[in-house]
Amino acid sequence: MATSHAAHLNQTAPRLLRNFVGGKFVEGGKPFDVVDPATGQMHAIALEADSAVVDAAVAAAQKAVDGDWGRMTLTARRKLLNAIADGIEARFDDFLEAEIADTGKPHDLAHHLDIPRGAANFRVFADAIANLSTETFEMDTPDGGKALNYAVRKPLGVVGIISPWNLPLLLMTWKAAPALACGNAVIVKPSEETPSTTTLLGEVMAQIGMPDGAYNVVHGFGPGSAGELLTSHPGIRAITFTGETRTGSAIMKAAAPTVKALSFELGGKNAAIVFADADMDEAVAGLSRAVFLNTGQVCLAPERIYVERPVFDRFVAGMKMKAEALKPGHPHDKGVDFGPLISDEHRRKVLDYYKVAVDEGATVVTGGGVPALSGAAAGGFFVEPTIWTGLPHDARVCREEIFGPCSAIIPFDTEEEAIRMANDSEYGLASSVWTTNLSRAHRVGKAMEVGISWVNCWFLRDLRTPFGGAKMSGIGREGGEHSINFYSEPTNICIKL
Ligand code: NAD
Ligand code: 6OD
Image 1 (cartoon, protein in one colour):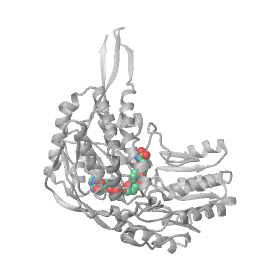
Image 2 (spheres, helix red, strand yellow):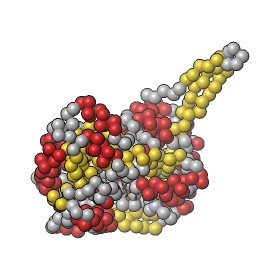
Image 3 (spheres, protein in one colour):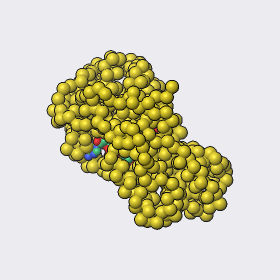
Image 4 (tube, helix red, strand yellow):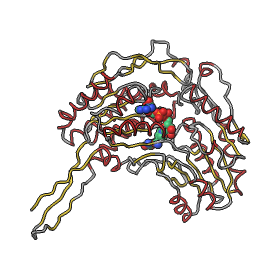
C-alpha cells in the first residue's frame, strides 16, 4: 500500500539533539531549530556546544586515547568497528527516518545509498587497517654492519571531523571510520542543517560498548561556534573537513597556529564529456542520474556537460525527457524520486543562478523555476530540475559551483577542445567521460585534471581507491590506505644490528 506523508508528519514534540561527550549525552547549550526541508517545518532542536562543551569533548577524547581505547588491541578495535556497522544496521529504520527528516531526500535514495554506506564505511576500514603493511629497509652501516629500519603506525590523537549536509551519515562516517580504525578519538561537528544521524550514532556507540570519549559529537555552526572552536583548539591534532572551498580556506587559517594535519574534500564544478561514439542511452541514463541525484546536491555532480556536435540534439532531448520524468514531493510519498534543496537560503541561491543563466543568454530546455506542489510538500524548498543550452563556456553558471539540480550542455567539435574546456576550471574534483573507444577512454580519462575520473559511469565507488580533489577541490586523498595514511603517523624505528 502507498505510504502517505501524513503518517510521517511530526505530531509529537520535536526531537532534542544533545551533545555527546565522554560516552554520555550532556545537557545545556543554546537551542537551535532543525528544519525538515521537505515541509519547511522544524522537526528537531539541537543544542549548540559552547567552549566549555568543546573543551570537555577534547578532554574526554584525549582520555580515551590515553586509556582503554588507546590501549585496545587491533583485534578488539576491529571487532568494535564491525559492531558499529551492525548497530547502524540494527537501527536502520531510525537512521533512515532521521536522515530523511533532516534532508528531505527521497526514501529510496536514503535507503539504498546513505544508510548502507554509513555501515559499509566501518566494515571497509575495519578490514583496511588489518591488511596494510608498513615499510622495512635493511641498510648497510658505516662500520660495515647492518641496521634494520621499520615503521610502526600510531594514531594522531584527537581528530576533529567537520561535515556537510548533503550526505550527512555517509560523509561523516567516511572520515570517522578510518580515524577510529587507526585508534584516534574523534569529535564530530555535523552540519547545523543535518545533526540527527550523527547524534543517533552516539546512541549506537554507547549501546555497543565503545569506550567513553572515543566518539564525541558537538553541535553548532562554523565561525564563532563549535566549528571554529574545534579548528583552533590546541588539543586537536588534525581536522578532516568536507564542505565548501571557502570554508576550507577559513579552516586552514584557524588551524595554522596549532599546525594541525588537514584533509579537505571541497567544492567542484565537474565536467562530463559525451563523445559521438558513446552508447547514447547509457550516457543519458548515467548523466541524468549524475545531474539530478540528491537534487544535484552531490559534490561530484556534473554541472557542465560537453557533447560532440553530431549527437548534441539527441543527448539534450534525452536529458529533457529524464528531467521531466522526475517526480518531486514528500520523501515518503509513493513514486517520489526528487527531493527539496536543503534550505530556503540554498533555494534562493540556486534560483538566483537560474536567473543568472537566463541573463547570460541560456535557452532553458526544461525547468528553471519552482514546482507547484500540494499538501505538506508545498512548504518545502523545491526547485525544478533544469537544463540549459546556448551558454558560452565562460558563463558564470558554467564556472561557479551551484550545488543544485542543473547543468549546462555545450557542444564541441574536437577531443582537444572538449579536454580544454573540461579542464578550464579552478576546481578539479571529478569528471565523467562517455565513449566506446577504449584508447580514447584512457587518453581522455587521464587528461582530466581531477581527483576522480570516471569513464562510462559516475559515482561508482570502490572504497579502497583514492578519493579527493585536485586544484581548489581539496587537499589530500582518502579511501583505503590513503585514509589510513592520513589518520595515522609512522614512527621509524632504526635498530643497529
Ligand atoms: P559548508 O562549507 O558551508 O559547511 C560544511 C561544514 O563546515 C558545516 O558543518 C559547517 O557548520 C562548517 N563550517 C562552516 N564554516 C566554518 C568555519 N569557519 N570553521 C569551521 N567549520 C565551519 O558546506 P555545506 O554547505 O555544508 O556543503 C556543501 C559544500 O560541500 C559544497 O561546496 C560541496 O561541493 C562540498 N562537498 C564536497 C565534497 C567532496 O567530497 N569534495 C563532498 C560533499 C560536499
Ligand atoms: O563516496 C564517497 O566516499 C564520498 N566522499 C562521496 C562524496 C560525495 C559528495 O557529495
